[in-house]
Length: 338
Image (cartoon, rainbow, N blue to C red; front, top):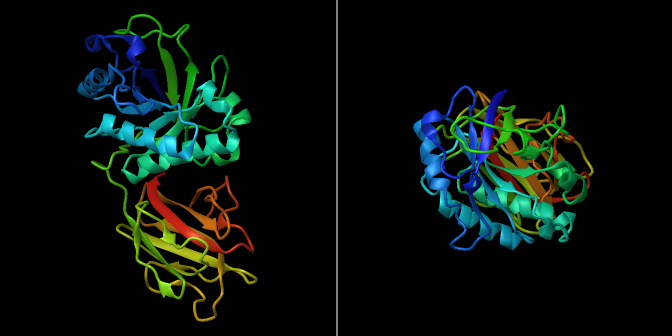
């Protein structure tokens, strides 16, 4: 566990010559809010440069006003403009606590988080969500957040966090103090590995995957650049490969059972010749230490994806992506740090 802080324009000019690296082992910096051209945090560049000069690992956060998936994508694209050319050891978080957004409802708010994170991941940044127990209980589908996304939990005055999380903001302003920063400061713990989340360094292996649908093998998709499949067209076969290590995968057939595991492109998983539709998939990355595979599917007739699954023994899921009896029509996968 490491000790850290989060900062924004509220802290004013930080005296980085007085920052104690034993006291500040990481920092999460506000980059921006909204999606208008003038909504970059006025101290972001200074704070990023200052913590970088000390060799302190950093992450970033974007305060969200998005009420729809489309607005979330606009915010993510604006955030990407603000952080262009920068690398991070912690995720770029969407900050979801704006009360004016809560009325949009659980489905809309959860989709906002997914759209922002998905857009950031496509651009090569690890991304997550900052929120609090009230939002998790009342304004988000927590079963699609906890254990599924990198979570930065805001919970103050408690002896332990409300749920499993990557970061815990355990103190907000009132009693926090750090040398080099005037006034109050938010304090955080980081429970999981600090890593480089930018595509510019310590890059995760790539994964390519393709599916058989509509009577043909569709082109390979790399990482989250797109999805493999066709909307409302059942998938009958799956083939995968990775740039490092090996990818093992298998599929479950509607009205049948699980087929044998396949490794890389030695074969494909499915029953194309028998015209049997796939309803669930499992994946496992081996031989790439420190990394794992995250994947998800959508089912024909549904408008949204099912939650991500990590590996095939994910304790936060049923261990597979899909719904028994519902044909898979689209697949997405990405390699991430454990």
